[in-house]
Image (cartoon, rainbow, N blue to C red; front, side, top):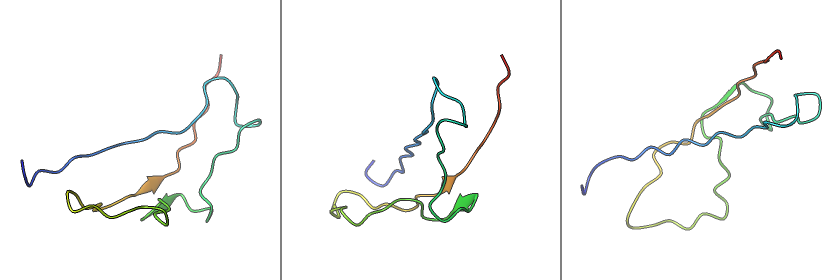
Length: 64
């Protein structure tokens, strides 16, 4: 403090449906998006700066 960095990681997915029922993907279709957040409604703050907002698409299968 006051010049430290914070990391906030978010994961989106489903625990109750498989990939055939829920299709989450990047709008561009890319695997990695350098700035994967829509900030059109974001109001800038004098308290912090958003340095990065990288988005990764990860797909994995779990067999039961």
